[in-house]
Length: 172
Length: 100
Image (cartoon, rainbow over all chains, first blue to last red; front, side, top):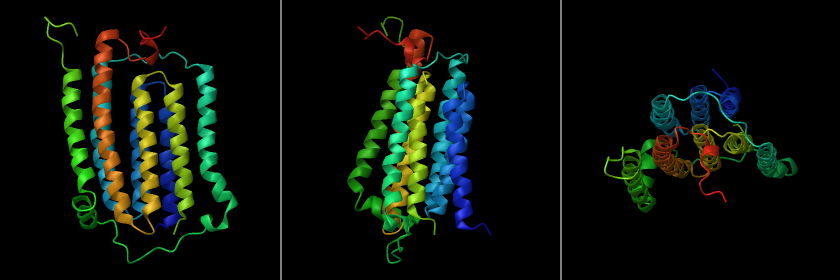
């Protein structure tokens, strides 16, 4: 039986190596495939957090639907892999921003013993099972749920309109 | 139990990689993938932060993020397609009509 800590280390390594390769691969198809690996790593992290439902949804929606969409568009465009070099200024700035993000998260933990200690879980709280999440979605989060469904409808209409081939008598 | 701090560090690393990818890459498809990485990092924080006291709420919030990400990808890829029809390229540097 894999210990929780080993599982955490393995899954975070998968997620981070996948992410690093997404950023560095020149070929967008390779980047997309590494992104699948990264998503699966994050799904594993959700499992170690006790959110099995979210892990399953992550695999289905992200690693399944969204990645197929990406690969489909890449194949549709039939791209060559040449890519202009990014600006060196942008490169330096982005590394600074990334390091600043990490430092903002890491510094409080390095300084405080309390934050580093594992909190005692509240066992009375409802766990992240599908039933409990559904209860929340249809009671406490009913309004955001409806808003998101509207957003998805708008996105669908917008995507169809944008990707539609313009008619000949119409200028774009 | 793995301390939450570790999850937050992993999430910060993922987010940082997303930032680097979004700013340095010029291929708009890879830029979108970097945005997905950052959204994933945010989801990880939601779930890790909610683990000890209200796990169900963390999952519910992460579900909303996933729905928004799906909408964003659908519209974004449609825009990339429209852009490709116009420019025969998906490089972000090739779209500079608004530059003075």
